[in-house]
Image 1 (tube, helix red, strand yellow):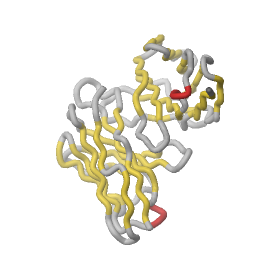
Image 2 (image 1 turned 120 degrees about the horizontal axis):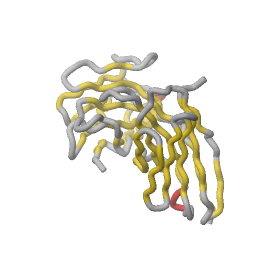
Image 3 (image 1 turned 90 degrees about the vertical axis):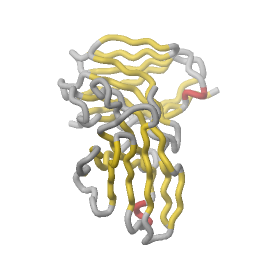
Image 4 (image 1 turned 120 degrees about the vertical axis):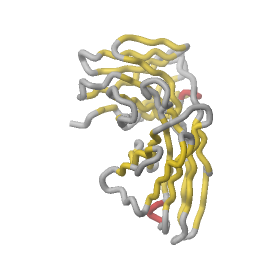
Length: 112
Length: 117
């Protein structure tokens, strides 16, 4: 079993739809959870960061962490064509310098 | 968010030459920086962890003599692809967690597309 699993997609939705992206993980030591957006041939951009369990909202984006289920989600409301990108989940245990573990990414296309 | 600058963004070189890629943290210090390689439509593959003032740690299967990493200061890490060959053509990305705090966030450079002819 991979340490972090994520459906690679591609996922196509119409403009204005609510998008749900998910990752599952196996390492219960992970405490820090992140979502990145990556456009083609660009570096990943940090979208959301969450520590431990709970929800976090920022504009059209909501991140959820359920540590008991080892499951994290990113919701995008009122999706726009500009949201078309690859979304990577990432997570990390406690110590500085310790490796971040990434999911394989989900390719999202929002169709106008 | 913190800014990581990566340069160059795009380079073409002849087979057998060496190419240096720079990664700078502009507004924070980074004791550690990570170097990734990414093939089209694939996820990030960690190549090595760069540590300021000490030797880099390479992932299994990554040739340390091929991919030279130097982390000379708290704001600069370099990756040199030595004697580049066409199979080294790829998208290379650096990243760094700020030294302040617990280093729980990771910020990426804009990436370097390397094409070896």
